[in-house]
Every structure is written in C-alpha cells, then in structure tokens.
Length: 158
Image (cartoon, rainbow, N blue to C red; front, side, top):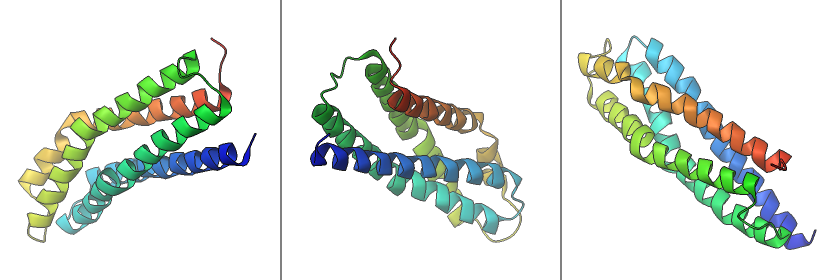
C-alpha cells in the first residue's frame, strides 16, 4: 500500500466517522425533541439537527465519495465488485433520502422552533413532530449506513 492510498483511506475513514456522528446526533436529538415540552428545548434540538443536515452531513458525504473513489482507484478495486457496488447504491440512496426527506424536515422544524414564542410547544411544532416519515426514514438510513460500513470493512465475497 503506497502513501497516497493510506492518505485516501484515512481521510475516507475520518469522513465516515464524521457522517456517523451526524447520524448519532440526529438520532439523539430526534428522541429528545419528541419528549420536549418547551419551545426552548425544541429550538436546541432543531438547531442541532439542522446543523447536521445542512453542514456536517453534506461535507462528510462529499468527502466519503471523493476519498472513497480515490482509495478504491489506488487499491485497484473495480467499482463493479458486488460489495462495492452495493455499498455505492446504498450510500447514494441514503443521500437521496436525506436530501428529499430528512433535510427538509429538520429545516422545517428549525424554522417553526425559531419563530415560535417561548413557552409550551406550539400546535404547529406538535403537528410537525407527529409526522411519521422522518421518524421512519432516519433509523432506516442509519441501519443502511451501518450495513455500508460492514460491506466496506468485511468486503464479502458474494
């Protein structure tokens, strides 16, 4: 393994950890925001989820792709290997779901929380928190992400 391959692999792993930390942050905030009784609490969790969706995750996802492809090229992995192809499909599916469902939900909740008056959770926020799609898609993308990590580490021969 040459030095450039090691560099790309290391940067790829750092980006994976960064994206994974965003998943963990959003999971914890998602659980806590559902239990919040005050708008101030919702504001904190909503800001963190929006930060993850708008800053942390996009940077990490781009870095994963760039350094992942660079590392694969340096290691001589063809992109049509079963485990690598499946990992790519799942990675881009996660990205699509985040862009069309999770990011808009986080941004909407953040907007509602920032505009709401202090005090008990407003009706608008409560309605937003009861929408089930982000609560379903978030955990599904997390499980898919863990499976992608498994594929990249185990490199199964199937």
